[in-house]
Image (tube, rainbow, N blue to C red):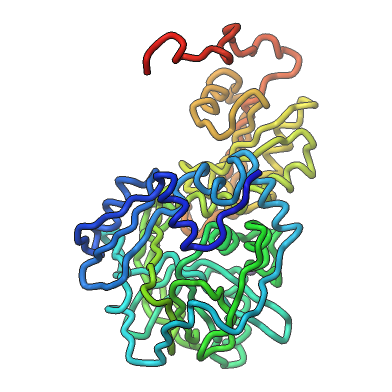
Length: 453
Ligand code: MN
């Protein structure tokens, strides 16, 4: 195992050194042009736009474009990612408080304008406007020793106004408590994060309860603690090497129209009345780099799926011992579809694995269970297993009327979904009938010994 890449700037250098980041020198518009090129190149490389129209800040997007790239930035191979994440959850490394850092190089307590000072793109045709998509929202509840870091879509609605969608998870709980007391909630939005912090900020589910510090999970992931420094105008600590930090308050009792916005599903999330953050100060490095995330891209889906693969794996494995790996697939929007790799010991194992997977994370609506000789990350191989090992009358599980995800457009009513399980494993009593045909010597043969390539 090699070392993880530590820090956002280091990561940009690392990606560039491996040919995984390209610079775009010509002027680009933040309205659709950045997102269009990022979409064309969504499978990599990362893009550093040096000349964004009407802005002095460069913009980087797609820094975590593939499983290979994410694994390399964490110093592991792709098959070790789930285990790596599990260890970080078990052995978090808390951040270290420092008095200063590059983030404090420029501090603006007024006279800023979010609509002009940041190169925030408009990504999709019907988006309500520019959205900060790669901002990590940090809040603290010092009396209870709680820090929370989470992603939220942030609509830039005015010179000092952001509107945000807060789904009913940790930030929601903390905000609703403050709101019940009529208090504004101090908050910081951090832009410019390395892979470890981005993944930690995207965690959720039963293995990451409220009170577990995502900055410590991120420290565990990269093996080096984050240095954090205090914000200028609010009581929040932020990574001292962040690029940009927006400081402010989520206002109690205030809701404004937010959305529509193209979500991880590739469809537009509706316009809702959502909370409002008033930005009171902005800190940034000298010559900061703005980090963007294109929604509904491999990067987006990987940031969604990788953090909850260990949650699914642990839960399913606690019921069914032969579970080897899980893949939360990109085609399933990084959330809805799971392939479980299983070394079946009992004929009922696959069905139990389906049920346990549904219990692990409630958003999941399709589970395909495959044997150990199928690569769960290769969807062609998975489909082959369905084609040759699955019979619908015998191997299909349907559960009607369960809880799904609020943003799934196919639900007949909000988040009401049916769940589907496919047991694509071999019947134990007839294993030889299913044997994969093989060619002796195939693995060892080197094509370049026969052909100039
Ligand atoms: Mn949390």
